[in-house]
Length: 332
Image (tube, rainbow, N blue to C red):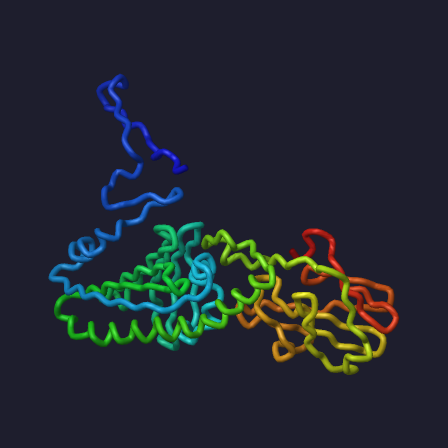
């Protein structure tokens, strides 16, 4: 059930007896969502035309098959921390503001020595604004929607490019650039989305299943691992000595390095958002997540000792590692 519109009281100066109740967001160009207000889609062109005298406004669009669930497409867009690691487009960024429904950043694209202001707003269910201004002369207003279709889901992007009419000659080039940018970035995100599909099929859940800009950018252990259906074991003799290997077992994975009768253990599934961690990500005894750059050290198992990792308890016995369910809320 939606909450009633918030109000405030306006008092007339002459008398406190006369008062009027009005909506707190009384601008008809704004729509309210979860305590924030955004410009309506049908008012964007008029706003751009008013702000840019003699404006030239042209439109473009792009669609891409999403495959994964809508909530994962929304999470993927809200997760801004993956962009420098997954997308070659982004050189660096400084986040100026972040809230549940919006984020504002200064972003450097590639090697260009220019800071571009970028606003992201979650203005409707499964829909975003992404607005940027290039060199103070070109405004690009994107509407990004995560939609369902007969094949599952898809990303639909529409945009308006607004400049003074003297710069209209740049619009075809900008439209081609935006088409290519959307195609490249969605292809780069495909492995992330496909990984999410595979993990959900194995019973994984995430603290970001109800995504917002705050929880999607919190560098916390958001992965909720499935239970261990029954105990399993890894035979020590099957592990090479003093060489790390990845072992997939009971719907999770570990990187193991046997050192005679002791074992070093790293997560094979990132506790943050479920990225696959492999031996190739191991450097200087730290395994680094390829999605967000988080680094994890090893846990050491000695005979008779146990550790909790990736939602499981690992205990080193004589000649084997026993894996069973961990205590509740351990590594999710």
